[in-house]
Image 1 (cartoon, one colour):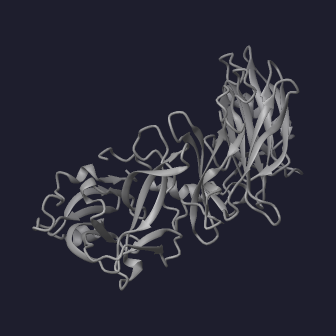
Image 2 (cartoon, one colour):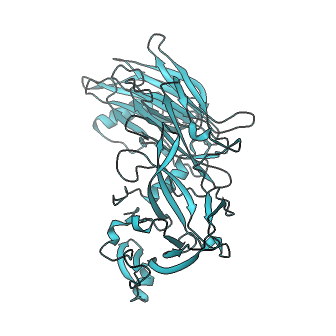
Image 3 (cartoon, helix red, strand yellow):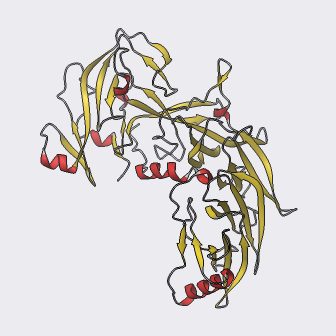
Length: 473
């Protein structure tokens, strides 16, 4: 319980929304950069080869997302300890499609190993890994168009002096590579969004060493409410079970998680969170009204947790918009197909922090604020007369919440307030104690005196670092 939350930058969460929409994304495109200034040595020779292949001037193409974001990637593909140069470019005259050029230094001379024309104008994402299972690395490229739409894919297999291209006919919106089956080689996971008369799905592609082709080994349906992908994360649900944790966003702003894994007993992909039912209707138990929380290893134990959101206890006469959400971080139990709570927090992603709910506060407190303000206040919750009537809340979150119509707010336990640096300087508030200063924001707390009602559970300044965790340091 007292483990520190793994830091995840708020900036990355924002970027995830922009980048993981994949091929369907639009807006500003900074992937087109003109040929760089003349250089010397190996870089000059590489530029010369690119110019020759382009027939003159060219435009470097930068991948829009993923770990590899350079137009020139250096990687030892064949394991001989000499890196190949992988170049993405487009001839600037009379051609709109993007190219991939693979070059290698042979005894001091850079020579072309392959130059291939894509079917699209841009590079969406690049992954490099062992697809064939021979211990060497292949280049997997998702190609996209600036106008949007689905991606196409090609895989480039390096030999001693040449390369081969394997084209994938399937289109998709996002992809990643991972050893899904624990067989010592990476599979290619393609994720599509729903289209008219076509369900969203996940496909697992693998390399056939006999035919030297890529084939679809398995597929599974995805949520058709997903309008974009927020986050794709290959990780562990248990010590033995790995899979892909997928956070999606609907048109209405709701997010949900799906967990796609290789089910050995069925010899195929499984997506159980998308298949659960309540009253004979499909229901995803992770459905939440915010994209702030995404799957992550929140307690640094090597397992990925799935977030769920519920409103803190409130009285039916209150303004529901003032009630804070509790984020419960859950491990996925693959045997029981259940979400098992690991950690409870109140999150303020706007200001970049989590507050871990202490064990002694669980089921005894409520909170107000953080969604529409720069503060959150925790209170004791008097539940002696609560109705304990569970129903779906009316906030549109899709979450289930106990509406404690008979409960009341009790003594205050803690207030966390975020000030601008200027506000803090101009109007120092003696009621607050500064606990962090990051950039233009000052984080401060007000801890009330202990009363009889909160004796034994009152917060103190020396205990606060166990529970208050910044996510944008």
